[in-house]
Length: 390
Image 1 (tube, rainbow, N blue to C red):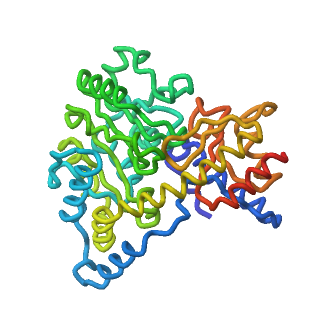
Image 2 (image 1 turned 120 degrees about the vertical axis):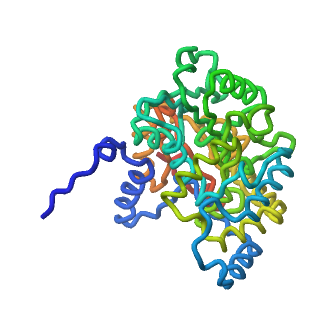
């Protein structure tokens, strides 16, 4: 038998958060337990029919059966520019140089550091965090410094505590608002300060904006970092149709912003992938142009679920942060448990309810757990009732 060994970069990887949860879930399901999964944030609502119809029509066109462009259809990028103008008031995006199509935003976030991070370069990552950015930087021999997000600072990094030396060393900073897992929304003043610092110290600003359309107050919509004057000097923003239009399996997203940053990502994609299926991009154009009323309906569903779960958690005596956006609830581990992982493991094994331990997203997540609102309300209520009887 061969004795092939993984590269060191693979051997040093921590277990992927959701893979470990899936392992425990499978063990419990094998005992015949009825599993209720509130773990991975995967929309349960179907993609709207008008998007599916557009996909079917495009898929029948032989034009879209050939290799796609790695940067994406110009028509899709033009639709993205128009959507940014309508939704965020960002009016000066050049579809040819400042927008690139992605095979889902995860792909772009993982590939982007390849274009700009050299061994020893410092990336700042706000944590608790989506696991991909620090892993991608680490693969390249880059250094990662984590900026903690705490409840007392509304889950925003305390930029005043980042030393000037650190800013001078940093090559890139990754932020994610609305935030996964904390559900925090960044105000304009935060983005203004962050953009100012990145311009001053010439730091690349990566903003993961995948959840901007899952919000609960029409008067307080999450913003794009590109709304800030001067942001295009330093920023690239990653977005996706996954959460906006219930298209997680379709794998379609976009990166928008500074032309040099977009070009660098394009250089990577030119060499490692062949672009998104153009029939999916055609469906994406229709989604961006016609999807707003449907997204509003999705938000109403998540709002109803959110309110029902918050009421049940309150009745159970479990503390939480009321989310202004995302379809997650960030809640505190009840007293009496030594760690987030201990609590979540016991809930899965004894009650068949899958939660996500906060420490799986980073050290400041210890003492918290995440609930995904991606199943219907009756099952959500049953899950909370099971947790109450623990």
